Length: 411
Image 1: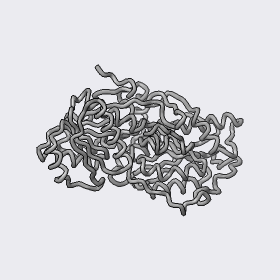
Image 2: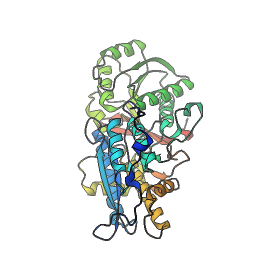
Image 3: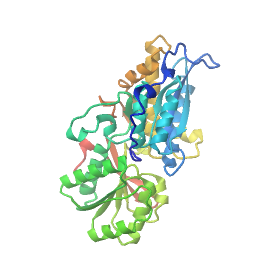
Image 4: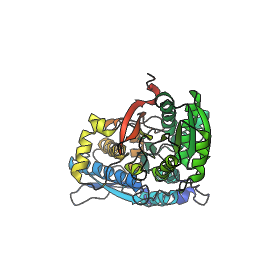
């Protein structure tokens, strides 16, 4: 995912302003009471506000990975510590958080953020400080492949950025194909919230749906803060679609779906991972039959996730792990494995240029994670393109279909 409108980094934020002296020589690092070196993993996510359900699941899952690593002495001579900061889903706050974390020489990587728009504000800070930034949720292709990826001019602009979530290019196309081949929709009305994530997802859906023969009978742009959709309902009703697609997040899509049905639009609403949350159903008394896709397979269906689920429950977190719990654990574990590789290659100690070495090691990290095989391609994108379609059934999300997009089953 995702989202909030892109906050442009002004020319006042020069390279010198973004580069912090604290990331210089480490020596033996910060020794704790056990004689081990403390490595801090930063975390940036919205842990307050409307998207906090997702953000808290991210924070808790990162904490679980850190706790498991310490318990098992995953990296000899190293104790991990999580420093979690709340970005409130705002790009400027995410940038401030990245700058703060970069200023701590013990921080060797940041897990997050949730929102693609927030990531855009953090990437330059990450790059200038040789600080790995790995998101379990960002899906906008531009983040890894540059603004001209649609023209097949893919260029990696930020060598410090990685993600364990597949892109909107994959997810939106999956949604378009699922709507046409599985839902059997022939006409779709497409709405987006004008944010980085929502616009990209809706665009990919439209392209794939139309390519397969579907008809786009109308489009509309709304504000992510809108909660009154009477005007939109009237337009959608007149267009008589078989399905409404929404590019955006659950705080708006929940009310939108209910108002559509109250207004006589009885077809399902479909969206991406920004909709896939239990809170979507809480906000929408008429969610029954609606669809959402999310990256990966449901962790409950993965043998690889059984231990994660058991450990999460045993840890006693008050909040559920939500959509990005498994991918967050894998993101955090990827950082831990990169640190492990760097330490082992340097005779059991962190080198002076630990941040640079960790970023280099991230490109080669590979392991069997909670969500499946974890590895990264030349852009920093996950090599796992699995997507799952869900449908609301009896007050819960039920998994309907999972497949890597390139291997979509057309039967």
